[in-house]
Amino acid sequence: MNAALQLLIVLATLVSTASADAGPDSPPAPLLVPGRTMLPDTAGRSPEALARQQYEKGLGLERINAFAAAIICYRRAVALDPTLAGPNYRMGMLFLGVGQVGEAVKGFAAEVAQHPDDAQAARELGLGLAQLNEHARAIAQLESLTRRLPGDGANWRALGYAYMRAARPRDAESALRRSITLPPQSALEHRDLGFVLAATGRESEARAEYRRAIALDPKETGAWVNLANLDRSKGDLEQALAGFREAEKRDSALALAVKGQAQLLGELKRFGEAGDAYRRLLARAPGDLDARFAAVRLYEALGRDDIALEVARDGVRHDRGSGEARLILGMALEAQGRLREAALELRRAESLALDRGGRERARRLITTLNGEAPDSLRAWFVVDSAALAKREARRPAMQPRIRAVPARPDSQRARPVMAVPPERIDTLFLPVLPDSR
Image 1 (cartoon, rainbow, N blue to C red):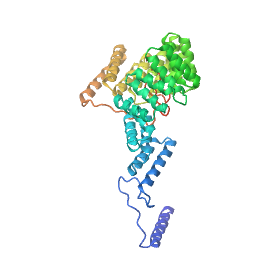
Image 2: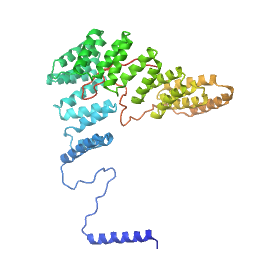
Image 3: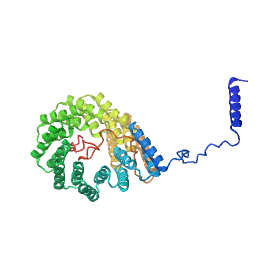
Image 4: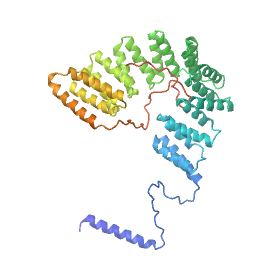
């Protein structure tokens, strides 16, 4: 008899002995019902106590960045005790972090429904509605909040944001000026007021507000970026470059500051420095496809096809499911005369495209490649075209493609043009830089 079989016999004997010692009255283990996520509570605790336990567990999971698990705990908490303060608000903030503003608004609305006096949840609800372009509801929500709590500057600042989203700059200016009068003094209100003034053509007043913001907080990067944008708009490129560099010095993760430098250095024909800036930018914001395309074309113009191709390949490594990244790689390969590899990437770009326009761009480029191909590749392109025709014949009615939302956003994802209160993100009130493509 081998050793493994002897061990199994010993274990079986121990188990049967333990069962006999337990006696006939030992309670059976609880039966797990499919779909049940927790064993029955044997401590006799109330639903309210269990809800609090789930809420605290969710907060702990947030601290270790386990956001999906935290949302599960918060939902359990709400199911056990819908009146518990906190879990709906936390769910709203987590959904907001991945750009699911609609889901975030549901969380904030549920929190406000149970706790009407929660000013922070009420403010976030108004801001979320403004981001969804539900202007009337957003403004009504935030006007009500400022009437109820007129001494809170954050409420007036949020109302200014909602007014500006609704194309009411005069009302936005009034709300922000009211915010500035309320203690404590903050750089953010001056920065936001500067944006409104610049948007209405009052450039000198805007500059004054940005400088006040910097005087209050020299680390306020948004004011530095906005000043640099004003300098750029009037053609003072060196001064603008200095402003973008000051912003990056104070926040090395702020991609807008690096993007501004890259574009300005290109305009100043300092192409080597521009390339370095684009590579710093893509290290911070690898999903910025406009910047990646600009960097690839820049390095091609500099005769550094090796770097151009590496930058293009990095985009695919970052997101293998991106049709745009595949398109950029295909164009980089085409520039080096690697036509067959380029065509393969463009076919992948076509299959991954999220809309008809993306598919058509890829097909036009493939048609161009076909015209440029040497005789040795003609047969390959004929076969490729025939394969495409067969796929099209088998293709069902077009269904919209849906991409999964990432668990966490890139730190510099595309952002709204204007600001929101500091408890959300402080660097939003920034004019969008022009496309580099």
